Length: 410
Ligand SMILES: C[S@@+](CC[C@H](N)C(=O)[O-])C[C@H]1O[C@@H](n2cnc3c(N)ncnc32)[C@H](O)[C@@H]1O
Image (cartoon, rainbow, N blue to C red; front, side):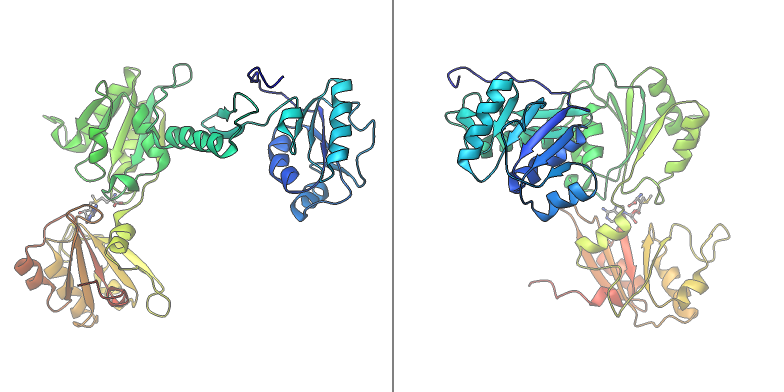
């Protein structure tokens, strides 16, 4: 039997009796997949691990508390033989053979009539990897192949386009702060499956270089907008490409809903009747300080953090931020888009009660190769930004958390 390769097949076990002999570690590992398959599982074993016992208590399996007896496999469609008694295993597999029940044996793959593949799942597909022959079985190798395939499908490094089920539409993907490794697994996979990618200036632009040549990459900053406002032109481009039946990824920096105008795009697509799915991203407001060694909260130091846009000055009538109230908070202030206005912002915070000695850190181009951190206080930050020539994009952190991390190595 072992001379020929195993024949792979997917068993549909829903409502069908599966007998498991032995309630130890092997059963514990295999039972969840059998339960997920809807099998009618009978466990025959005098004892069981606490996890297996919990499955019985939850009614997911029926536990017969005794050792194997001849006849236990009579009504089974499939059996897993995994007792610690080799003699019982041999008798059970002889019974399985007599009743033509496919059986897996944990102690002797050569004598088994079925093998369990290394399995994993990705997007409605089960990946199952089997060794071809019993001799040379290397479970770690099959598991490693399974991991490589599943991980590759999840992160988009292994591209398997959907031909039947992929619906046109737009995926609004948060790309994270810039480091290409900081996009989500789902975001990366969707990028790999896109026909069109409309990308912002911020975000993981390095990922665009990896896209297959047939993918149309559109730089959102360069969309001609003639009589439209820039955002309207982007909305329009999303709608037009999706209407052509294309899979469109709108790749945004950080998280789409943190100062990202993401909801405007969702609304425009909804008005045009185009399905849109939002994929959250890692926002620069937390990750960029973190990458520079600054926690936005710290026990005993800051019990809150507030993320604010600094794109208009505090005295600008368009500002929706209550800066005097923010000055009274004791926690961390994280200011995005605030480099140009930081002088006015610091002045306002001090005027309304925040200490001029409050530490401030500016983290420019965080998580990229060009990341740099410049430290100051509310009293000195305006001058420091000028002297150090700090440029956007930068995240500005105001508060005692700036000082809690270890000194950077010299
Ligand atoms: C229009 S907002 C978009 C924020 C984005 N949606 C997010 O969640 O990170 C752009 C601002 O985010 C901040 N920013 C984004 N990426 C950054 C990075 N890698 N380094 C520093 N600041 C960044 C800067 O303050 C920049 O001006």
